[in-house]
Length: 276
Image 1 (cartoon, rainbow, N blue to C red):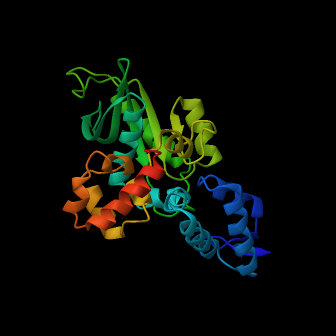
Image 2: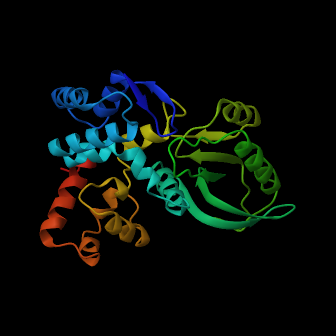
């Protein structure tokens, strides 16, 4: 059966690919099979992947909010836009969870010009810069122009001293992080130039998706028990990760949630982040 992707391209419906994404939500085998059976009965020639996704999401939500929240992860990351400011904060949180110090949104002077740097991290005295390429649409990939441009900025900064964590820090490496994917040319140039890449599915054993799942670093935009407006309010209040709500329960009351809704949100966060 032919289905239509976000880009408009037509592909064969891949039941196994959908099954894998459903299993990643944490749903059990029986729930996944039930969802697949329902979808199989309702899809038709020319249906869009967006409609299939919405159907799968609504079916998962009936079984568990946290399953739906995990299934919604990639869309939730895209909600950290539109400009990507909150995505930069999210990436800083990710590295902090791995033992780094991190600062965001820095203005540093290079040999030739000044540069706005999204994130700078430090671990074991090694200091690295991170440039975030946020894409609000899932079909947009980062091509070779991205590492070419960022490599030139890194070269302008790396031989200078900067007041970041100490008065005279030097940047020793550079990351490029995207919520989508890199083209093959972008990966080839980055590898050749010594740039570090992190994307939705790369590197295979340490991708953005895997790091989020392993460390339970789900953004608040995942949560199905909050409205889009409520999620935006939390982001503005610097609550980026769902698990940060556990230590700031009063913030849910601050954004106007009733006691019953607070209870539902905390239940979802607990299941999502395995706080039992």
